[in-house]
Amino acid sequence: IHCIESLEGTFLNEFSKSYGEKALELCQEVFLNNEWKDSYDDKLMMASYAGGMSIAYSQVGVAHAVSYGLSYLLGTKHGIGNCIVMNHLEEYYPAGVEEFKKMVEINNIDIPKGICSNLSEDQFDTMMNVSLGMKPLWENALGKDWEKIMTREKLRDLYSKL
Picture: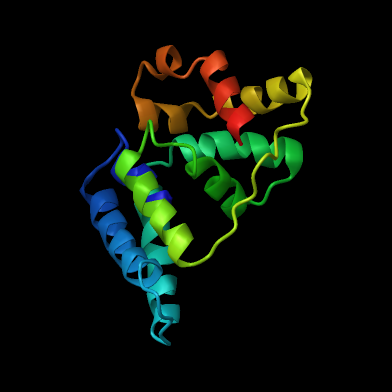
């Protein structure tokens, strides 16, 4: 998710790109394979490092901005929250979400669903306020006019799918 967000972002630069591409390549090797190999531990360690360096030189995007609202209100763990959100971001990262879903399926990963189904409007407002406060993340994902693209209504609709 870090790789997709940095590689698709408007803040992309050669440092971020080189780290992101390597991290994504390693993740593809590990998570698109049906058989676990001992060498995967080292590959995942390097993918984690390179993915972190990729976002250090650029920024994350939509999945993180939305996930932070989940973490703030519901206490959703970072990685799980990002997966819950990424599962619904075809509009923003079509190829990345398609590949993400293949990885989830191949590895029999169960992503929680319906976590926002019983929330009040005040709770949705709280999550949206936190999320929309992540301005650099939105700008990286959607550009300088991001507020015209990600309206409160659109964000509310996205949260209701989670």
